[in-house]
Amino acid sequence: MAAVMLESSQSFLISQILAAFSGLFGGLSISFFWQPKKLHQHGRLSAGLIICSISVAATFALGGLVSRWLGMNFSQADNAMGLGYGLGVVSVGVIAWLANFFNRREDSDILEVAGELKRVARGLRASRQEGNNSQN
Image 1 (cartoon, rainbow, N blue to C red):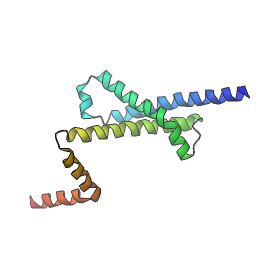
Image 2: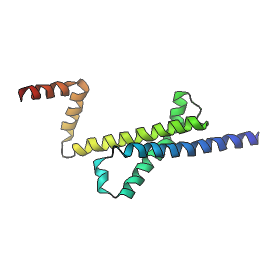
Image 3: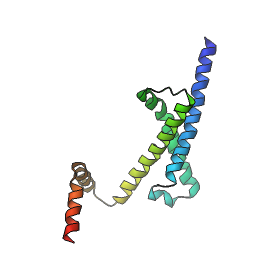
Image 4: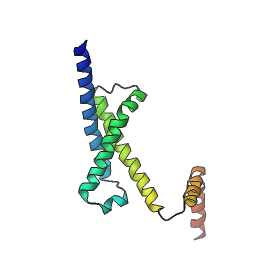
């Protein structure tokens, strides 16, 4: 009985390590194309450490949860690696998108940003821009 539990915990530990490496590569692959503009103020090493920590932490924190939600066995190496890569890409992508979003609106009032989000949610932004383009 103890041997089965030890084998199961070793398998889970190996899958966590594989998922973390896959998340690391997923985060790095998207960071080559899309980085927050504020991250350019720091050196390459610190930017790399920030991106790596985001992708690995998201994989550790969300790997088991997402695999359970999808009905996958996270203890299998191929499932863990695929999920890890996907979580690394998504986590760094969402952080980069949010950082760039807030960077562009840094000097705006919170009510202006909330109004813009409300217009975008209702689909009014595209029609307003089309109206401005037709007037020019």
